[in-house]
Length: 90
Image: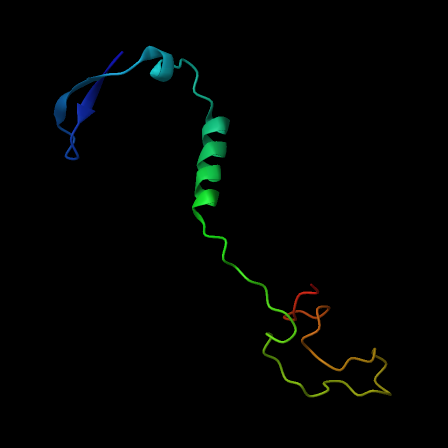
């Protein structure tokens, strides 16, 4: 199979011969190509992310709710994992 080669400006630069066993596909499956592109982009990432633990979260250390009389549970710190913006459990 012969393919035409173009330059970056779009002009003809010649022809290239490729193998039909590799490039002679009649039906191109978009789902397989999409899956492979997503796989390659995911493998490109470094994977150096880190989650914050209780000592890393920057919140106040003041007891933010009264111990008695508020009707709420007894909490002492906002950086606990059950609050939005808090740390992770493990």
